[in-house]
Length: 119
View 1 (cartoon, helix red, strand yellow):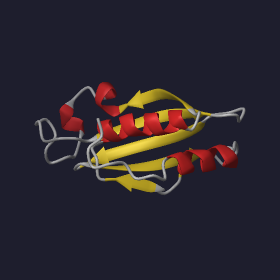
View 2 (tube, helix red, strand yellow):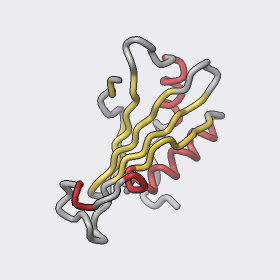
View 3 (cartoon, helix red, strand yellow):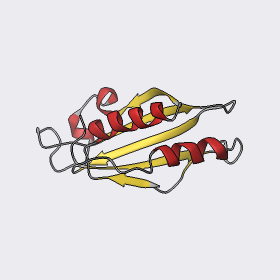
């Protein structure tokens, strides 16, 4: 699987970005399913190279969402965050290309910048 370069980033922690992303995609009539949460999957804090890991200052996070629209297959959206910033990327496999219209819909829904404080 290939991961495209980040198409957007927000100056928000990953958990707040995730909430905002889900709201924005829902407004665009796109459905999401959370398939991976790094914090939930990580067993030992020592496996992270974050200088703050294991302390309350650590905000390393990665989540993977499947985004469904009218296409027959979902698009995989990856949020990767640390140091209060989150980057968004789309996974694409050369043998099974993601639907370009669905990708465009996702990017359009997330084009609007999130407010400084997202709840």
